[in-house]
Image (cartoon, rainbow, N blue to C red; front, side, top):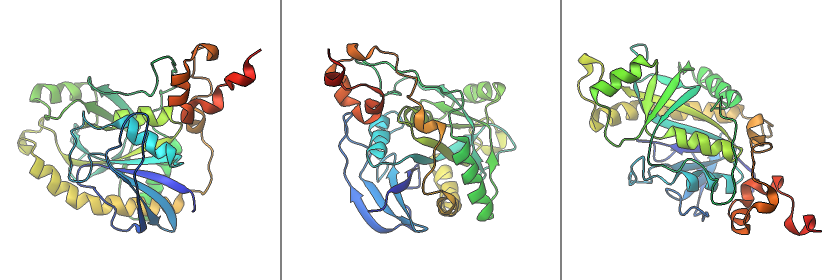
Length: 294
């Protein structure tokens, strides 16, 4: 089978990719429990793509309930080296209107109840995260959007809130005062874990509303979000198709070497259980214990 070129994470309203063909569902087991759903492997623009709905089909998991570690580990197990995350967001600036598409370059984490790292329990790593999205992959998405003749805005900051309730008006104004561009509930964990898994990551953010700061917009509602997502999802899928056409079959990137100098635990102090749990991630960087023994 041809290698899987890219993984796509679908958010609210994007539970399948209608143009995927030659479909195969794969159930993956991980050391962190089950992913949100089976991975759907298919062909798009003559390339192999893996798709996963982050909330599960039927939207069964809240943002805090999503097993982010299992989701990203599953992509790693499939051999995926780049992930495109499609997400619904609210706008915190007048210039980002509902139905606009933003490719953010930065994140601010306001979540409190989620697992955001593969590490711990005997092995510690600190990855570089100053630039949390892959600039090369984001550039390819921007070019794909241009080829599809769909305008996107490149750059800006995505604030990730805890949810599942939407912001209070006071919170919305606070985030505006910080200079945030858009607000969502899911992408920061995906970005952090993808970096630890040495997978390139980028976000296609679909603006659905003005959060609650904009007086003329009224309260944010699920109906409003879904209505705008339905309109935007067709454009998102066109962008994905054109982006997949542009992706080179092989590509090296600093994202693919994020753990090279990140593991700080002395190798002979790492418990065997931790080695086994994270072998897929850390195996290339840890000497074989038997080989290193005197």
